[in-house]
Length: 189
Image 1: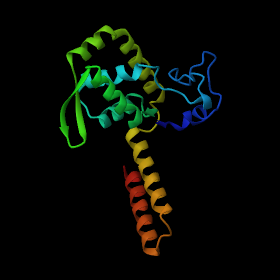
Image 2: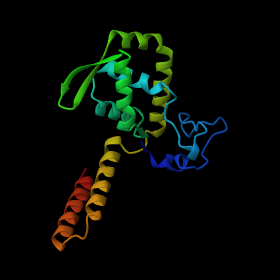
Image 3: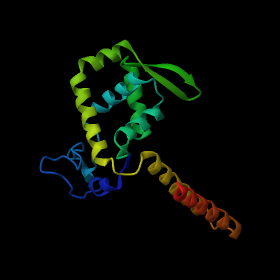
Image 4: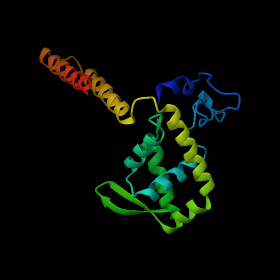
């Protein structure tokens, strides 16, 4: 799970709770869990989020992760370890089915049972997506999720490369040139 830096202290024991126990955007709850790690969705909410997104457009797991991240303005992106078990559960419940498979990637589509579940729980689904829209609106001034992701990818790539051992002068110059070129491209945008 990736959290926006604002939530870091909250997620790691900082006391940023409101009197009602909600987090800074009214979506997180502590749930009395050790370490105070917040939960983005109440139990069962993520199933409705995934089901609703699939009802809008058949999707792969990764696309669902990105759609949730975008709907929350980059404030949160669920991990594959949360999304893929949810997809499996929804498939076992008969709410979604695999429409097609492209190698290991499965394209999920909603079933009539899934559509009925959304209809029966329409008020709950609307409330969840309303809270998500509120988080997006409150977080809207932050960087776009794809920029945050790209920055994290760069940080990870540099860390992995530097952890493999010393760099030669040529390798150091090559990495520095690539970083300088990226900085110039960003400044020119």
